[in-house]
Amino acid sequence: MQTRQIIIRRLTPADAKDYRRIRLLGLQESPEAFGSAYVDERKLSDLEFRRRLGLNPDKWTLGAFQGHRLVGVVTLIRNGGRKERHKAGLYGMYVVTKSRRRGVGRELLHTTLKIADTMPGLRQVFLSVVEENYAAVALYEAAQFKPFGREEDALLVKRKFYAELLLVRRVVRAQPIL
Ligand SMILES: CC(C)(COP(=O)(O)OP(=O)(O)OC[C@H]1O[C@@H](n2cnc3c(N)ncnc32)[C@H](O)[C@@H]1OP(=O)(O)O)[C@@H](O)C(=O)NCCC(=O)NCCS
Image (cartoon, rainbow, N blue to C red):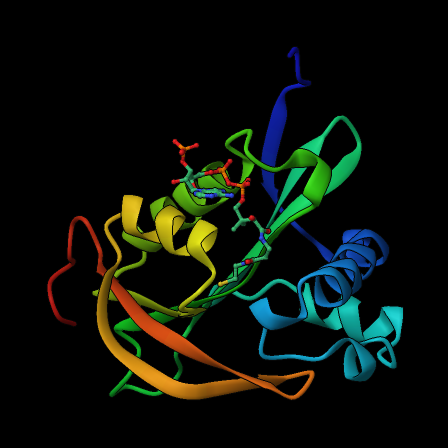
């Protein structure tokens, strides 16, 4: 099937409305995939989402656009503090159901990892993923994320506990320690 080209770019405060919409959609549609809850985040204003997208060299939220439509998002946050600045976490990966299985998630992940690979002093990117989220686990493993732990009962969603895998990926060209 012919699909429109996907453009990946960094989101800015001007994208706050679209970002809020897709974030809330994700929390509603895939509650077991995220640590945050729809009922909590829906209370947050557009202003709070604008703040989240404020320019910060340690925080990158990328969006995938199909035409003008935001169809996927992911966020990379570098840890603060001199003892942990060599690590960054990947959060909030989400692709709307209609756009799945077309390489959008992979494109978002690869672009994020390219950014991580150029951050001076960064050595690894970590994330957690619900063990039974086979689609996401396959996506991350294909990008060379390796498991380093497993948390039993990590999330409680609608009275069901979910275990999470903890994954890490070394940066491709580790920078010298600063
Ligand atoms: C996980 C998610 C982001 C994948 O996005 P996507 O755009 O459909 O993924 P892609 O089309 O880029 O697929 C890339 C790879 O991921 C894996 N994958 C994606 N969907 C899959 C599925 N349903 N079953 C098995 N593997 C799957 C495959 O390895 C795939 O490579 P392939 O197409 O060569 O087989 C998407 O399913 C999603 O948003 N899920 C709900 C939210 C979520 O689980 N987020 C992750 C939180 S940790």
